[in-house]
Length: 144
Image (tube, rainbow, N blue to C red; front, side, top):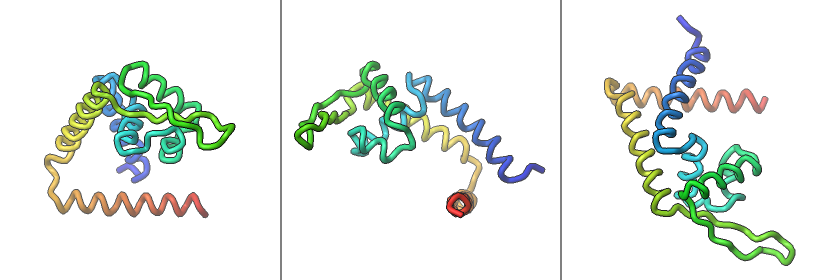
């Protein structure tokens, strides 16, 4: 039997591949999908997006530019906060972007339903508890 962390690595590879397939179906990458979700949630400037994601500003800029080029985002130019500061852009989902995000989210929900279709509520709750506990343990081990 595999070690728990080994199993998590294998699960992560399978999960990542399935997410990539779903995202590709909707002409997105996983990162682009996450950015669309964040923008929909109100994090609509590069500063807010960078603070929420683990992406550096240059990577984030490229991904936003791709989403704009695909026609999923509209740009609103905001006034600079300070006299010599650069202008700030706010990004908003347009109809096409909202449709792509909705479709991707629906497919993600279907995947989740398929994965857990034979699981009872008690099993799903236990998994959540154990995963949350594992996450906290990992965070503590990084802080040590």
